[in-house]
Image (tube, rainbow, N blue to C red):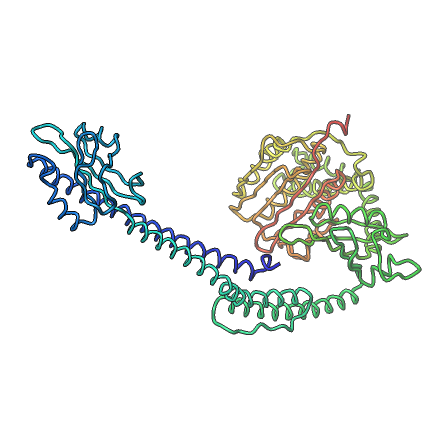
Length: 589
């Protein structure tokens, strides 16, 4: 229908506005005519009143009313209205004959009653003794302080009524003609205005369907023409961007096909929308399918991917196929803070795991072999420090070195044993209790404050004292935070600041340790969690670490089903974040 179209709506608006303007204009003219009519009547009323008063004064000076008969005949030929003289009963004594012959007429009793009280009469309207609307004015005639009669002045309003009716008729016909004329003219104007909009609508629909060939002509210089040019520019830009996207997609496809790592992309609806050659070959099975689904993936990998979709943060994990071990990393695809799926990349770490297993076995054996001799070395060193041997100054210097190295080796052995217990025994051999993080952080701050004061390092703590407890062991969590704090203190510059923060990040309690050290390069951020790995780019001044602290932190956090992560840029310090689950009483009851 025309009223649903853009042109129809403009047409209705134009016609409505024209009609409204004409209606207002007609109302103004009608009001002006009305004001003119009543203004003229008011002026005539004053004039007739003056005339009635003058005649009443004249009649008061005559001995009787009949003496004014001849002057009345003269006035009747001059005035356009009638003059009437009555007695106190309203009987007409003298009268002119503009309206009618007043002989024998009796004026209304209500008028005579008002005149007998000495008040004037003023009336406009229809009367029984006149066929049209009249203006009537009457005043009493007073002779020797007595009312002896009355003077009436009556003027017909035929002229004013004729003029008013003519004006109202002209206004009505003018409104009707103007309104009827505005209907076709408004339709023509609406179509002209709506035509560019209709063309732009067609062009945009073509763009939506992939047709970019429609070009809108520039027929004017107004805003609609500018909008049409913007649509043309938009069409060209979209076409150019689509070509770029197609080119980049082809390049990405070539890159993914050439790498040896498996890559898949998953949509928010948990469908695999992209899988490279390695992924299809690994999970396609003997039928060599060209497409794979989540059901084709191993259970542990599928569980990790589903968790990654639920929690749009990077996740890391492993999965096995036969005797092969794969390390997988997931990264969410975010657009304006809304999850748009994820990308998962994995590579074969079977050889790395075999080497790590050999290294773990070797360290375990060595640790057990060295534990007893190290205990003896510690005992002898303490005996020498008790001045049993002469040359005390030199002996003390040597023995202090022996003791320091012995303690360092003992810590190394203990760390190795801790790693074995955690990684082999897992969470089964670890204590589970409700640990209040604020109390533990306060204790750690007091413990490391002396060492921090020597280095002029400031500790800043930011936490909610009412945080929920975490599911961990008090000593184990203290071990985690001391390792992170010790690293931060070791790498902090003189006069630096270390921030320790704890907050509720449901369903986790999140603890961060942030320093102002030299930072950790990207190429070292993955290897520092391994045993004996301190990174190839660590500061030369760092010689006290064993390379086991972060490995213990990582193993302990994972054993308690938590997460640990690192954010660092070279020259901007490092921030370690530990996430632990909240303690649930029903889970340990």
